[in-house]
Image 1 (cartoon, helix red, strand yellow):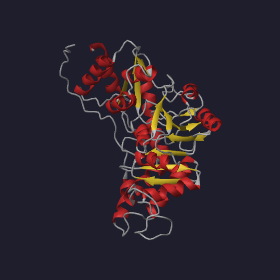
Image 2 (tube, one colour; image 1 turned 30 degrees about the horizontal axis):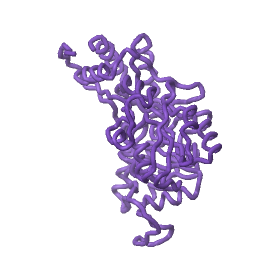
Image 3 (cartoon, helix red, strand yellow; image 1 turned 90 degrees about the vertical axis):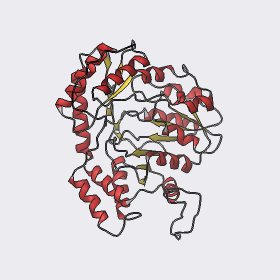
Image 4 (cartoon, helix red, strand yellow; image 1 turned 180 degrees about the horizontal axis):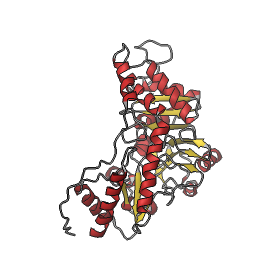
Length: 382
């Protein structure tokens, strides 16, 4: 299809933008002016704030959410050949962490409303090799963790909560990060809060926390020397610089979440009369922490037509993206495991029609209005 799109001069609106104030700048500068940049008190302070936020006993700060997932599967003693049931509709790290230990991700389809793993699809996928379930909170909306906990308990499986996108979310009175044997947060700059780069493992289990602390620090043991290594480990440490930034952001988290909620509500109102658009579903027992603002085009849209829409919006200065491509259709996963289109039709249909719009807590009314106006026009031209 050839699109005749007239050139238009509008202000560029990015897909995401971190919210940094003098509080964060001063916290970082205080560390830079001191003698300790890593393995210092700011890391422990940040971990304490995160544990309190998630309502768990332990938080282990690391350099990314991916690292936190890797440490979680290792600390739970998952091994080569084990199977982990998970979702194909997520950022690829939630499955790659399983491959890091030569285990196998076993995908099941998603719930068409929450977009999270469908609990009704899990039990039929359990085999004698199944050792864990790894659920993902998608776009800030939680999976049905009470049901996942029941299934995991019934079959004696470990349960991992990938809450990289949901810090601040509450599900049935419980905070994200506090479900299962271990959970994780991630703090890339597009998240609700950021450390620049970073993540954290969260758990109530002392054994998991102790192993994760050792493995993030090259396998060093408790109270042993710098060149004494009790086990295989990694350099997954988070610096005091990043931790100071994170602590300031945690202190501002209610403000940050409120700003994102206001923007989401504004989008919801502006899009309410657009028949081609379906906005985010929020379950009645959920307090949503908004990671991204993703809409779904109606089923008449093909993936190609959606991609054309994205190109038109980008040409007009509107940051946007497809969230998410299905993991099982990534080239490596198709080659390695034989996955093909049609394996998980709900996830694939959602993936083909999803559009992430510009979203950050300080978006102005003018910016959201511009995005929606351009979106409406683009829909008519593709």
